[in-house]
Image 1 (tube, rainbow, N blue to C red):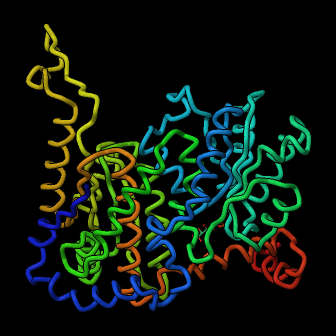
Image 2 (tube, rainbow, N blue to C red):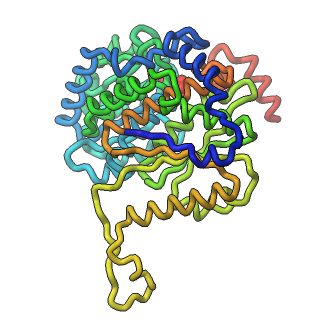
Image 3 (cartoon, rainbow, N blue to C red):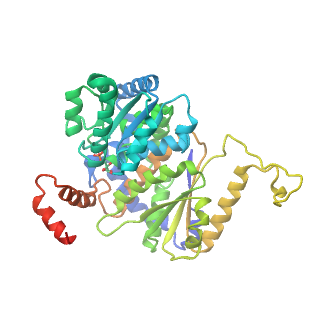
Length: 444
Ligand code: PA5
């Protein structure tokens, strides 16, 4: 279903690094499996595909069916781990043009992931007079961006359907007991879904956080979970046959060898938001205590025409992880031209998949030659099952890598700094002294 090819990494590293890393991999693996490492309160995702609350899963199916039947649009309000996974999976399994292409399921708008007036206004405009529902997602229930956006859409719903009617169209995904969103949901009677205590935001795509919007889009979430479950079983193996061990060993060794940036690339534009999800997963899990690979992403071949120059000849501090998809269902064959004005008749009858493959191989050879090692991740199929497996693969490898780096892969203490400053500048009660200090620093 998913294989890791590190041939090109092994060529660039003389020593048998995988074997040398086995002792550290074993410890990290044991910590994840037994829940005995740092941040062990947040390893609920490890067995989630097996232990998923079946009652909640059937409520997710029922809510998705209801939204599909009574709404032309679903507004998904959330930020970071509370939206990236859902958007990644929906776009990857449908298209970045999901809203234009799908006519049988509601349009899905992601909002509350910025403080942009333009984005908010545009979403309201796009919804227009359409019937819509809202899925507000916040584990803490207090994050500013989604909380503010929710005010706007709640008001819109209440104006359109009245308070009770609005309450029937609001689905809140949050902590089972704590937080402002949970209190509001209980008071107003919104249907709620739970973000388990032991699953942090960036590891939550296979909970209701991701599953409800994904199910609304028409993706088979049972297949998604089944694929994740198959990968979970593979990841139980404590040896180098485990694909996450291969990936974790390669990227850890490359980091040790001075590569500071990992560029996740795919030759499929619909992978873009999966890469955004991956960036949060790895950036928040590893980037702490002055350590960690910087996770970046690229869309090839498009970015070969922008970042390509730097990748080939710029500073040699990066490596690439390239996700290769299985062949497309749509065989687009290059047409033959009578005049051959563009000189492309040598490609006539070839599929775009063939061209894409050649571009992948050509780029791999050029970049490796230029000092950019490549890890290749191959998907044997493209459907929900494979993407479920891919999600779990990256999550498990991330946990391993964090432990191998000797950091807690499940906290994010650094995210608080800007939030505190923002609260102070916004005039939140309790932040008065800090506000004066910050304004002085800003020279105001
Ligand atoms: O990974 C994380 O914990 C964060 O990115 C959160 O997902 C993000 O800040 C949103 O938090 P919440 O779901 O509490 O609104």
